[in-house]
Amino acid sequence: MEITDQDLWLLKKWYSETRGLPGTFEDMKFTEYGGKRVQADVMVRITAGPRLEASEIEEAAHGASMYNLGSILVNGPAPGKNAASYKKKKKYGFYCFRSSDRFEKVWHYTTFVSLFGNGTLVAVVVLLRVNLSIQHDGYKASHDQWCMHNLEGVHITGLHFRLVKQNIVNMQPIPLQMNIEIGWNPSLEMPFPIQVPAGSLRKI
Image 1 (cartoon, helix red, strand yellow):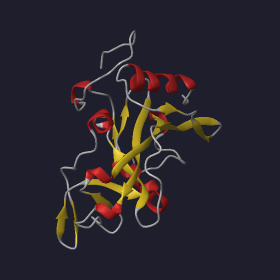
Image 2 (cartoon, rainbow, N blue to C red; image 1 turned 120 degrees about the vertical axis):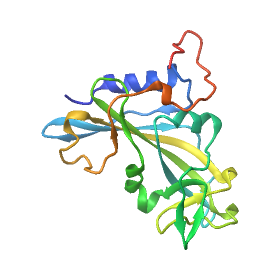
Image 3 (spheres, rainbow, N blue to C red; image 1 turned 30 degrees about the horizontal axis):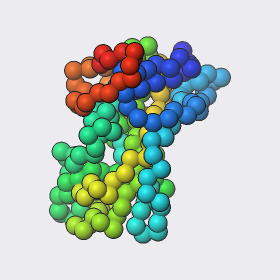
């Protein structure tokens, strides 16, 4: 089994038609192994966000759950329930990694789910621009994570979806450290107001 254009169509249907979520999809970029397309990455552009400025605005990434993605995009980011310790102080906020040097680690904070029931596992990373200058309580939550407690300084610029076939998750070059949840339970999805274009399916 391989990742195909059908998987992209299913993702667009899940995202745009049934949930009415914002953004423009780009084409899939495939990773091949043994002559098969075993992984695909899909970018969704939402907004440009504030202009990057040295020491003030930084690019970052947040490992999200497919179950709270809609709520993050529609209702906005929310402080996480779990807090990391920095210098023995718990910090509560919206966690992210600096894109430039910790981006791959953020995938360890996502969960791959069988979104379509066809053996394709899907996970998502939220792409951000964050304003560190307004995090007056400090923004380091650990040696490699930032904690955004002032959410006015968190701007969502896009999404990075990763699709992997379930039957090859133990093969290289797929990362071995993956959180996997077989199946998809719509009742666990965080609620958010849905605005679906006329004529589209509304069912979640």
